[in-house]
Amino acid sequence: MNHVHPLAKVKGTGSAKSGVHHWWMQRLTAIALVPLTIWFVGSMLGLTAGDNAVLAVRVWLAEPLNGVLLLAWVIAMIYHGQLGMQVIIEDYIHNHVVEVSLQIINKLVAVLAILMTVVTVFKLISGDVS
Image 1 (spheres, rainbow, N blue to C red):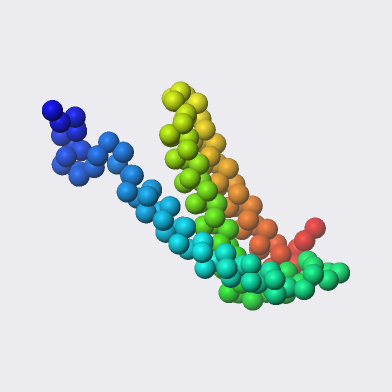
Image 2: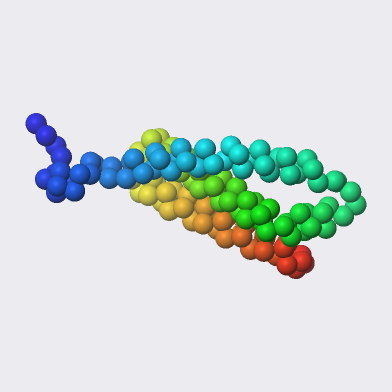
């Protein structure tokens, strides 16, 4: 007995519809995080921790490549974490209302974290640190 809806057969999707995409996004963000993390740790070790650390970071961020890579690293990290938390919620929360609520909160926290990161990096680059 086949429990797949006829429309799902036509569209070529199963019950989850987006499981392969989710799986690929987790793998791609994990792969991207390896070189980005190595770059970030190496860059931070290269900065001198003197009296004016904010100025050192601002000078470092003045390089366009550093700003772009920093944003890519943080966005990939937040998105990867959001995908992982989504799987945990799906696997271990069995109350539908609680699950949906946690999924919404999970996505909102990820979006807010990304927005805060972008604003903070642009403020550091522009010199507006108040």
